[in-house]
Image 1: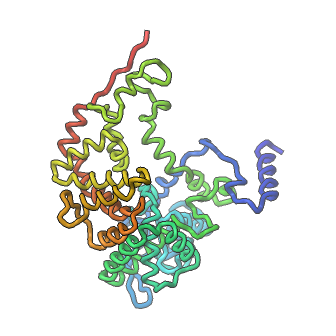
Image 2: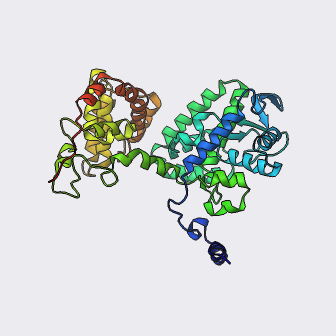
Length: 430
């Protein structure tokens, strides 16, 4: 018996002895001996794009579902046949590969949402819009999921599936401080959905539901996004080829983005203060330095959260907002942060001061928020706590992120800061 077979035999015995444990507890950490999941997803996307080719791809056509006509639909049988012809594999392997694409969220079912598999019959499917593809790496926020469940609760009049009801109750208890804001957002989305045509409404509902089944699966179940590498050796070859690259995607993307900015992984200019006695690096990167470094300015472009987390970046963003006469938005956000992380003794006083400065009628730095959010905030201020302004802060944060942040990166203020930013030369030690 070779070494690999002995190792596999030991792993099987270990799994049998620990059958009550989860897969994560039983299996070993493979480290970096396997390529990351992003490479797998890129390969899967190439296949999906090829499937959508107007001439050589799967045939898209309107399909009738009861009394509704679904545009650009495909059948499970067409998917299996196309994959079998394209990769020269048998029907069973093609069906497994197609089910993997469904489980990853590139194709979603119109009828049976509970089972993310391809049925080789007349069951209807559609291609997921690229906006929801896993490589986009949109953060799967609990707030968004809570809004989705609240919207389904409204549509279904309180009758949800068992796992959805459990998640709904859990999120309601955990996010109780801003639940009124979540319900308000759900009602707005539900009202907007009712104005769509019925085919579009059905398609959007199936699309959204499939997205959350992939990213928020029922308890005690695993989707293709979380399957262990150890299982792939029992799957067909195409499934194994794709799934063996499907782990640690977000971690690898984060490391690739920030590798050049980590003083322990990359060269630290002008020198690394952790290895030498030269502290110039720390002096150049002080919180409120007058002229930032080019690497520091580059970090501001990674995300809006990265910009706000840097005091020097906030100063630059504040200057831009001042020129646009909207500096009160950032000032309100900073006030909410101070309330959230400040001392408990001054909490009530700070909440009242923020209300008088930004929210009260005729306030000197009045901010523009919708009536519902204002109603939730005013109601909560009767019994203030750390998170009483969370709904209003979230509203202003999203407003700055979606509107002001993009214009800031294109503004003369940011270009001037980038132009003045310093790039220190490497210190030569004798």
